[in-house]
Length: 222
Image (tube, rainbow, N blue to C red; front, side, top):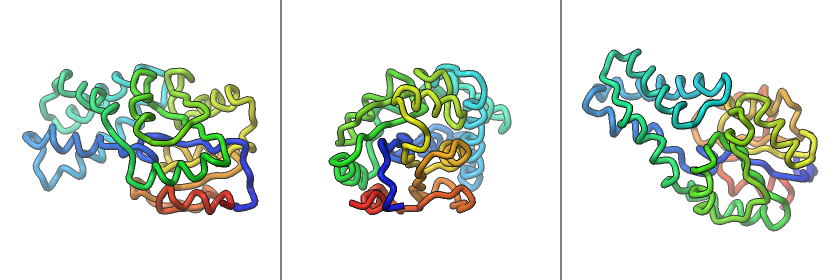
């Protein structure tokens, strides 16, 4: 893949660049209702409902999170509080990057335009972006695309805005389910999986795996 020179390097933001802290917050907020030995299962269910919430027509990201909390609470037959659920949405802009991100991005930014395609809302993403420490050519959100990843519409919106084809892009993500499965189906020119432990590696989807963003420079021959 080192011979592939993309027109753009595109990134998922939350989880890949920004440290995604939904699980940590869930463990904190629901410690009074979910036994410690069952918390891992609760967190997995919350993650599954978040994915399910983004698969249909676009809705505000606050609704995605509140609905996912409500459905998880219903499954677990525990108390749901909407104001408490909204804390997940309110927390997102405060999250910073993984430690490897600023230096890793800065190195590739010298040679390639960097782009973010995120499931964020417009009023969240720029707070997180400011903490990444690298220049971005463009940032696109699900709110702008009116579709969340993993839906193809989100990626197609990005291609249209950039004026490029899928073959022109190297897409980087720590999630197969949200990003790299769709990137495979769209025949995006290069795909990189950042192995942060969110999901098991599945080589069928034809990506190059790195352990952190510091490994990206080698993928593009720097």
